[in-house]
Image (tube, rainbow, N blue to C red; front, side):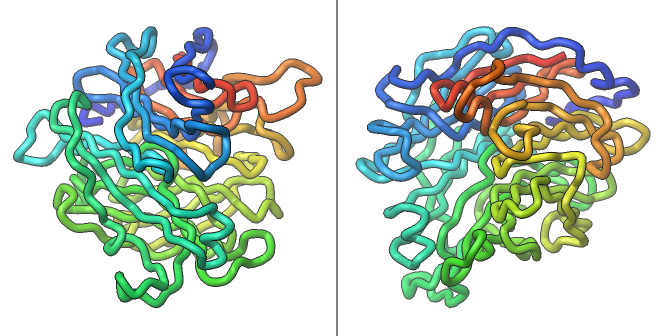
Length: 379
């Protein structure tokens, strides 16, 4: 946000959190299951929560809508569900929202929601049977109404597909999932960046056909450009944040699962190329999605918050960790949610973070074996 705060002691003490507030509940409001949360804070203080509304079952492919709820009281209460994208019996998913605060035509801000559609199961698309596409809708009135969808697949995807005349043979494709971000200052001020991933070529063992990447726009959604790929094979779901000195970071899932830590990548040119990528030993991960968020400046560096299930084997033990050195180390942490002893199944899985004020982070996350998506405020 434009008002990122200069902090000296921001979140060294993550001491308490409110009880979880249900936002999306399985079996309610027209959908069997809700998954893949994303959350966005607006300039007017409202919150927008997004998810996939899976109509008939919990499968990753099928009749899946993009849905949204709004909170006008910092997450205490939430509106009724609104369906934003419905592509009949096919899927619309992987919501990646972001606010553009620098479009001169809309001084109050423009909300973008990037998403994917697909016409087959992920493993079939990895085999070359089907295609995933990339779209966005936007709102110029803080989520009250939304534009018609815009297809940007030809700019940000490289499938082996004659219609797009690309030969790089990208197959499966997915946004982050979670929020995108905008560079708020410096050389790349105004750039919107969306992390993503794709598979390339024939399926490989341990998902080594996957690579994380990103795409960005410098002209308020008129044109888009691709970053280079993350070099480590198996890099998958990713999410980014701006750093000091025109740099950025990506926090990445290792789909291969051979190393149960998250990958960290750095770029010094706005996400166009990657200077380095490594496994971070502080960020234990069971092969799951995670979130990252810049929460303020301390001693000239961006303080970062990261969330993911901090367990090497199962989706449980959801943690928020804090870094004061822009993602190298993560010395502060807080347990957000953990199953009771003996629970079988995934307890807490995908999550997304939002900055509420200088002392408070919000987290929207999947809980209780994907039966609900809930919101907590963490101080």
